[in-house]
Image 1 (cartoon, rainbow, N blue to C red):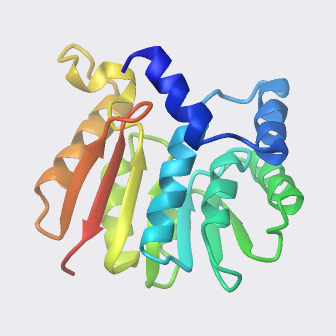
Image 2 (image 1 turned 30 degrees about the vertical axis):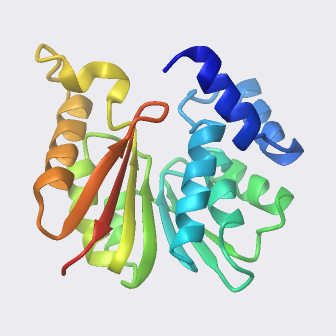
Length: 210
């Protein structure tokens, strides 16, 4: 997309407020990995959750809480966001972000390896957003479908993985994981999926069968 059009869309539809800007600035100041979603992707996730009237959402990969605030803001007052983070430092920053945004009582930050934590959760989520290590994405796909209700959304960031998915010479574990996830999302009869070419690509899948 033309950078001018991308900037136009972001400035018109996905303006950050002081809380979101502060979370992003803190993450940059602490030199955390620059892997949080963009504002326009956050707004898209927000719109999708609103569209299905989600009340119970799961996020895999909290980082410093930026994406989680976008997700939590889409939920009604009785809604709950559960987010999983392996790094204790990142989990603490995410809790700080949720408190600043007024969601401390409505967000569960669970610490630990995602595949281990996922096995402990009760099915019935309206949406699952995956934004964690890429090598494990095929396993996250299966876990997510187990936890999602029928009609729920499976959302996954970095579908293009910075272009590596179309580079046959790239056989790194992360790239292989993204390719495998995309193939599952495109071909598994339990979901109907598409890739939205926003930022680094967002897979949007609807669970249609158990």
